[in-house]
Image (spheres, one colour):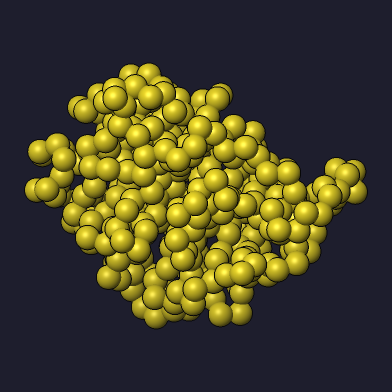
Length: 360
């Protein structure tokens, strides 16, 4: 019998739109009446914290200070108290192209971790963060892991620090589908490293950074309060996925896309049509997974206790969404991505939005 944590066969797109589509029940506005995404005032219940960003990819917090990555400029920015952005530094050697460039950031104990495309491969580095907010600077880089396969697409790129203090990273298959099933390849995996880049002794495959495999292009990682790792993943043409990640789990790609009910493969918790999803960054707050959707242009909210009761926020209101995070003050922040080469670029670039969650 196939390993499975799924609770339903497919997620049916919800009909209503607006800030919280399942609650408002308001009719969808005619496309011709809607301003170009990213140019209009933020919808009711959201606030623009900053704008003018170019292909932003990740938000991470250094204490109370938000740090942002820009994919193509390779800049790391800090968001100041007045809503301005300030360049903390540029990640050296980044070679942007397609979906590659400076991707995920994570911060742990005053150290900035970065995932970027450098010299024909994806690389994880870390640097000390020096100075105080408003005057932050980057220390010298140290390579933690190099040689992660890269391509014009399917680069993965999300970083997070787990409750165990370990560094987790998502990698894409870089267009080499069989590599996702090859435990000797770093492509199509979720990786687990110590913060200094060594392989933890309790990893599921001795001597290997591989934590789970059989992934196509996972771009979201988040943790539940009780320590469950949750990941979002781009499918090919049929199903995008939300997965509960177990050590050593095989999530099926390329043999299975979505729920396959095959022996030895772990099925997703939920699946969606890529037109309604294309999930990137995720965050978990109060038992609900919030999923930033690119092609689907929405923020999906999935209560883990009852996944079929999912709702949708910001549907078609602000364009593509690349990341969502829970801020230190408990608010939910979302990062738009109209300037990533696939959206309709807003004149003032992309934005960081504070999103009010009804009932939250």
